Amino acid sequence: MKGSKVSSVIIWSVISAAFIGPGTVTTAVMAGSVYHLDLMWAVVFAIIACILLQEVSARITIASGLSLGQAVIKKFGGGKGFWINACIGSSVVLGCAAYEAGNILGAVSGVNLFHATDGKMYTVLITLVSFLILWSGGQKWISTLMTILVALMGIAFFVLALNIDFSISAVLASTVVPKIPMGSELITLGLVGTTIVPYNLFLGSGISKGQTIPLMRIGLTVSVIIGGLITAWILLAGTLVHDFSSFPVLADEFRSKIGEVGAWALGIGLFAAGFSSAITSPYAASIIASNVLGAEKKNYVRLVWSAVLLTGFIFGISGVKPIPIILTVQALNGLILPLVSAYLIIIVNDESIVSKEHQHSRFYNFILLLIFSCVLLIGFASIDKSLSAFAGLKESHFGIIVVTTLISVFLLGWKIFKPNGLRG
Image 1 (cartoon, one colour):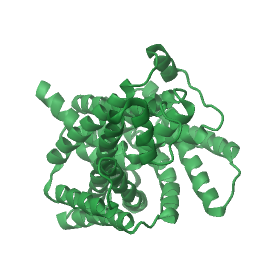
Image 2 (cartoon, rainbow, N blue to C red; image 1 turned 30 degrees about the horizontal axis):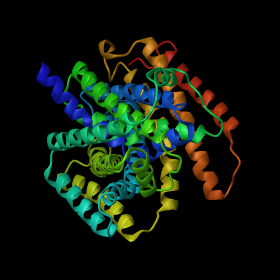
Image 3 (tube, rainbow, N blue to C red; image 1 turned 180 degrees about the vertical axis):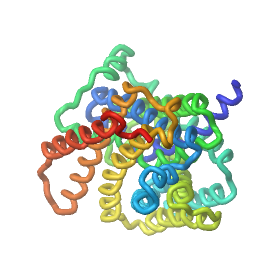
Image 4 (cartoon, rainbow, N blue to C red; image 1 turned 60 degrees about the vertical axis):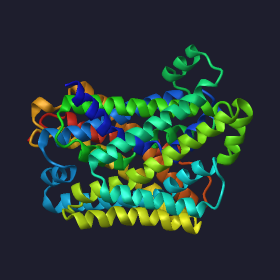
């Protein structure tokens, strides 16, 4: 049994490796640098929400024996279900492709902190190694590699955090007392949004096949908590710096404050974060192609992850910033995450898909609704930010966002809790 628990943790390490990428490093360092410990509670909330949503995704697959795509078809019928899968699946795959350049360049930035040279050479090398791993490796091999990379990240950022002068009582207080300092709204949403990502929900469903619910919970919880600790350590390290205009500048700050070990730890952690995400992003796209879009042939699945990797490589090697594409994908993912969350909550409460003995309690559903309200708020804020940037608008529409969120949460809650609303 002990060996099974360890194996489950290794399998689920893919999730923590996937959400701790260069974007997480950037967001957490910014949060610590500007707001010190005030936003540590957002990391804790994000980890709890991530565990619960990932648990729902995996529970549906384990309890029903269906992939998420098959569960959607069973719930909504062949016609409507097909279009739901097509829209959500293709949007999330596009998201994987749009952010792959950032993953690869994040790994390149980490290597450059050790030996600065032409970044294009590192870009080619990292892309090639990622390709070979994805081509030859199965789930077990990739999970083992992700466990090693997560361990590297953990050690590197823990070394940085150990050099910060802080009191344990202050850290503990910041984890349970929510504070949103003036101007920190976007960073707060970013800390949550960079942890709960849409493709991880599909990835979690795909890797849960063959597991039991108890083992899944152990592996998932341990893996995500480790990822959360790493994010917290990055935030703690960020409290040490005052200027974060680039990773080389950040390395110089760490070097001046705690010595050469600071720069090395940042380089190792940043490389591990970028390289792991450069692999897991195409890997997640391949699982979505198989489990949601219905691509059963191995060659089609390989074509999907190859396209994602190639897209990242092209933007990375050319130096072209795909800003319009990223803005569009941010808007799509801002809508996709709450949509996927809502569908998960609806499906897991349907006794024709998940039997009553495997369903959650009423209290658990209340917590899921709370999480849904938060991811919906994040989604609407992301859409508003992207569309405003595209249109050149500066004003926020936060009031409209809050009202729309409350109405949506009420409608979903009514669908779940009304008598016989989702039964059979």
